[in-house]
Length: 253
Image (cartoon, rainbow, N blue to C red; front, side):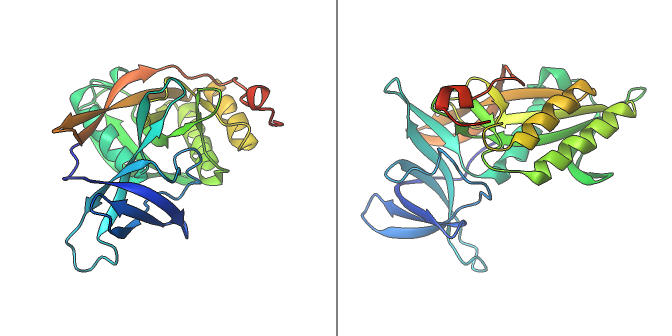
């Protein structure tokens, strides 16, 4: 997925959930839209470099959208994470079309935003003579202090309902796939965040036993002239359904 021309700045604060103050390179400060309904645990870090996309749409209240943040890592390197949850489906859609997701290759057509019993799922893939594949996409950006990636970053009753809908489809003989789009270049594996949403973690383990496929793919950022120009799904990542982050962080689970 290609980005529009992005503008760098320094994050000063996120507030009122959907607003962020960002200082641009010329010293001016702008208010950017923060397109992320989650807690943004571990990616809302004031003082870090961020990238904004501009808009000249006169109907918009805010001319800027917060897209990416650069985060320091324990090894002294940095990682980039997408805070724009609305980009995840576009990233995955491109990957489906180009065959990057090996487990979902060979489908002749797909539909977006498919209504099923109890939920609306992100994609339905079809090919003659085969069961349909229903795919729900979840963006992962939470990297905890133990170095691993987790989802969700806060309690997600909606996400749990998606899991139940996928399980019902699997039991009806359809393919049902939960695809974690890991939009943080410092994350190399994923697990359910039982320390933040125990019900989600338990449900994920249950639906996996009922036939739901759980996949994770990591993203790479492409640059031009030192600026991020594209983000793409790139590599399969391992998923652990049993890891307990609380054992590392001292959090009761």
